[in-house]
Each structure stands twice: as C-alpha cells, then as structure tokens.
Image (cartoon, rainbow, N blue to C red; front, side, top):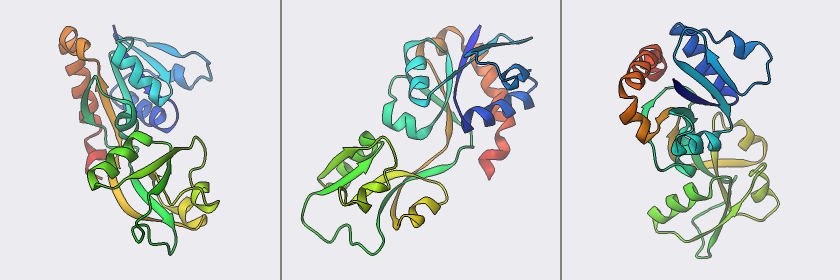
Length: 212
C-alpha cells in the first residue's frame, strides 16, 4: 500500500483532478467527509490530507511514502527526501517587496525583513552578502512595512494585487514556486516499482501544465 499526503487547499483540489484524470476514484474526497485518510478503491493507494509543513514531516519520517507540497514549503522546511518532479501547477514566486518609492538598498543600516519564511529570507540575503534582521510574521506580512516595523518583506507573490493595494511593490524575484511530488528515501528503495509506476502516470497527466 502506498500512502500519498496532499497539502490541503488549492494543491489538494488540483491534485485530485489529476488523480481523477489518471483513472482513480476520488469521489469520496468530495463527499463532505471529515476523514483525513482515504483508501482509493481498486488501487493500492491511500490519500492523507495535511497542512503543508506537516506533509514534509510525514514524508521525512516515513508515515507517508509520497507527498504533494509547494516548493515554498520545501525550501523553508524540507531536507531529507527526494524531490521527484515539478507538477506544474500552483505557480507563483518568492519576491522581495518594499513600500512604493522607497530605496531598499540606499542605506548602510541593517535592514529589517518581515516574512513567514525566515529560512528562505536568511539564505537569500546571505547569498547577496547582506546582513538583515528577520521578523517572523504569521499573518499578513504586508502590514509590517506599512506600520514601520520592517523595511521590506519576503513573501509569495501571485498576481501582485495584494501588494499594490497595500502600497507595496516587488523589487526582486527570488525564485519561482510550484507544486512538487516528494518521496521518502527508504520508500523509494523498498517500493521503487510502485512509486515509479505512479509517478509515470502523474507525469503523463501533468505534461500540459508544465508547458504553460
């Protein structure tokens, strides 16, 4: 039995569409049930629903053989697993954003960055050789520059509308993000054929998304 962890929300919904496209009966997940683990009839597969960071944890610890999670979560939390394929959906990007009209680099003071992704922010500025103070924010990071507690933010940007409506503008793209399929290291050895077969089916179904 293979167990696949899905990140709840938009990635879950898109992955369920893909699973349906490759012939899996995922109708029970649309039934309004509050179950967290579902056995797919006619397949040697279980689906488990979890928050993004927990998907990484479950795959790393072997509670799940595979997981679908955003590259943002992998960059912030992940380490010990195989990142097998870019699924081609859930596309967005990490960006550095500041208040409109402000010169982020026009000062010698240590800049303060607000973010939900402190590890991503630290690594990014370390590569640039710039010292920054990181503030971990759990809610709307856009507030931090507005109320004066940060010089900029590192966050996920899709359309940029939220930034514009709050007087912020992205000044640097850090990296592109999309959904990835990850695999437990031990499971890849013990269940290689089953995982490889499943992966081939998914990759065939997502080939169009990757070209978009």
